[in-house]
Image 1 (tube, rainbow, N blue to C red):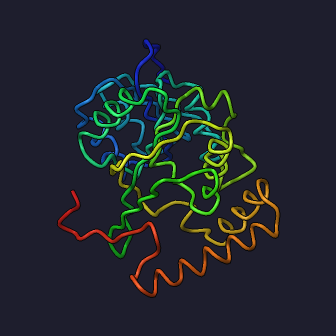
Image 2: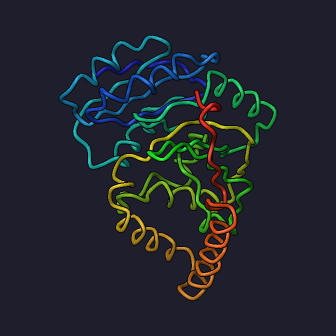
Amino acid sequence: MRNHIFLKMKFSIITVCWNSENVLPKAMASLSAQRYKDYEWVVIDGASTDGTLGIVQSFSSAPLTLISEADEGIYDAMNKGVIKARGDYIFFLNSDDALYDENVLEDISFWLEQNPQTDFLYGSVVNTRTNGAWLRDFGHVTRYNIIENGICHQAIFAKRSLFTIIGAFDLRFRLNADYDWIIRVFYSGARCAYINRRVAFFSDGGAHSVDKNYLAKEREVVRLQYVGKSWLALRLIRMRIFNRLHRIIYGYPPGVLKIIEEHLK
């Protein structure tokens, strides 16, 4: 365990990893390249047996906290990261993700300085897939459409205090605890805002892509915590009809736009 105690800072970047030596260097390089340096990197490793720890320990661009121990899954590890975090705002950067460019933290910091009341800020992300890269722009989400739309955690900067106010990720949900947590944020009355800015690249890998049937079924369980079955059924039917028409007309679902290759870094 490598653990440093530092003064409070602007951002805590939390990365959860396990045997990630093949993908982690890209995430780490995107952090090192940031022009804005008021951040820490909190890495929660699930007791890797490859070269992951050596890669993390070579990081010298910002204060580093490294915990390596067995966990109960990604959300247990993310909760551990929140406990160790010291920044005002938390951002989760998965081991196979990367910040979009070297100005992300600088631009987000500037926006938050201009809007200090913001509890939860989210932008757009680029989803890298085998069939290309797709922009996911969530737009202006409210508590009235968050259940239908959702926001992936790679797009958000959340005040650390939110985890005290509304609680940690719910470990009952193996693949949807972030979806549940974000719904709780919007339902709590937290001050949420959208920034028209690409925040990160994120991969389609991991359990979410492998176990899509379980992902969908568990998501229904999450939704039913917040709305009745009849209301949910009507909203989902409407959403699916809209999504299908959007795919027929434009060739891709709403909120997603294919990016031509030359625009990628």
